[in-house]
Length: 202
Image (cartoon, rainbow, N blue to C red; front, top):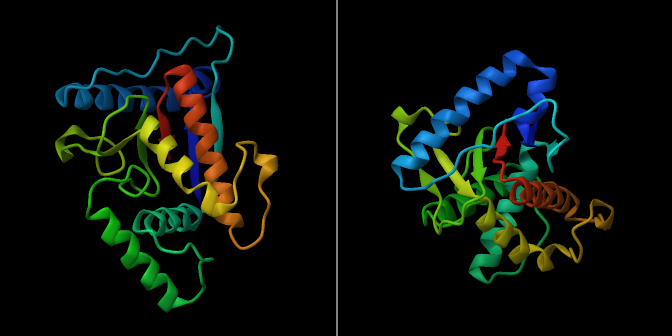
């Protein structure tokens, strides 16, 4: 099991999965209404199965990849050296505490987001949103900005040895999982900005 990431989800499902299309269409309506209540004007673009494919993305990775990428962002934000993640229960607990401490600042769009559900929308707002439970938005109501996620990815790229955005540029080594997650999220951000679609974690 792992995290799936989609951009242009409705466009694909309109062609291939009518039941899934209706489920996600309603979810996007709830998201749009909840954002409007926060003063943010955005709606997922309508899907037309007969139209050419929009710029889109579909990918994913194991859940712990994004946790390790969040760890790198937390270390970078503190100005601390970025060392390879360690294995073992004690190391994982230190990692969890580091990320939780950064999450308590309510500032990072990468960190303040559910692992397995939720959205990033292509609207530039400063802090992650925490929508009320009654809005019924997946991911515990945490919504991030595509633009801010892209900025955070750019911030950590040098620490991971990333100099280009193409997946083929992943050099491997001790940061291979972080690099893979970085490239997947980076591609999703570019597709989101190009087509006006949300990035969907599911």
